[in-house]
Amino acid sequence: MQKFLDRLNPEMQGTAFALFGMLTFSIFDATIKHTMHVMGFSQVIFICYAMNIVITGGTGVVQKKSFRPKKARHVFTIVTINVLEQLCFLTGLKFLPFAELFVVILATPMAVLVISAIFLKEHLHRNQVIAMTAGFLGALIVAASPLLFPSGADAGAVAVAPHAAWIGWVCACLNVLFGATRICYVRKYAQDENLFALTLLFFVALLLLSTAEWRSMTWHFSPLVLLPLASGCVIGNIGLFAYLKAFGKTKAPLIAAAQYSQIIWALIIGYFIFHEPPTLVGLAGSALIIISGYFLYLRQQPAA
Image (cartoon, rainbow, N blue to C red; front, side):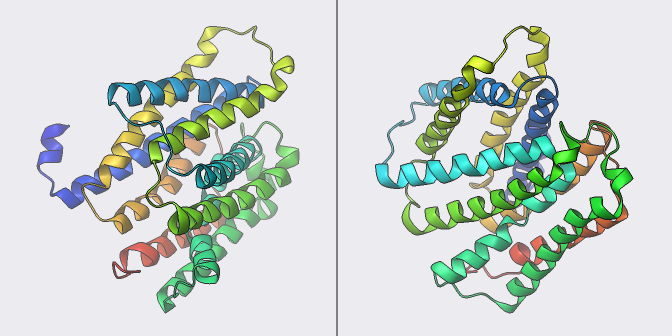
């Protein structure tokens, strides 16, 4: 692996790290979705983020990182928004097909541009407006594909409760809104905040929220049930380090564009793991999202 990376220039190395990170994040999310079929929602969150706290906290101790945030007010706001964003994502993961959820969520960069233009007074270029329109239409097409092909949407292990898919669509849209708000808030007020402390506090907040249903949790299950989730947590944390390393290798727009590769991973995982066949309409919407990402990140000047 190292020999392969040595053959690449730093920019290509950064892109490779970012793509690897996106793949691991998709695998991690797939293990959560898989575990939700055999365990309760709150129970999965509790176990998942307990594992993440151990892995992330242990890594921080070994690397002697600071656990102290800089400004409590901003940290509280960011963590609160992030928790709402993640709860919406996990709920969407429960009620929606894997690939369709990711296509909608990848409309977040478009929402960031809109919010930053309104509240941060950032100027929008013509290409950005075109890209946002294409991305919105792509997400809309994917959202409409289950209505046009209901038999395909119901095939396989689509969700825990396919009849309540509307809950997933609402949560997916709210995830986009909360995600864009969090990014713009950090850009405006907390660019120099301790990201390691923010991540750990975010994990702790989700862990504490999940304990609200502690009494309803049942712990009579085989330890083998936890193996996929534990593996996903480890793989996801490895991917996080690769993703962060990418920022030291290449430009931020290329790293941001790598996020759109999650559509490809989601389609592959959805088809082979959850038996969710993609429709032509859904694939067309995904293509629009990818094209919009190209114009948003790869065709813009660095200042944009």
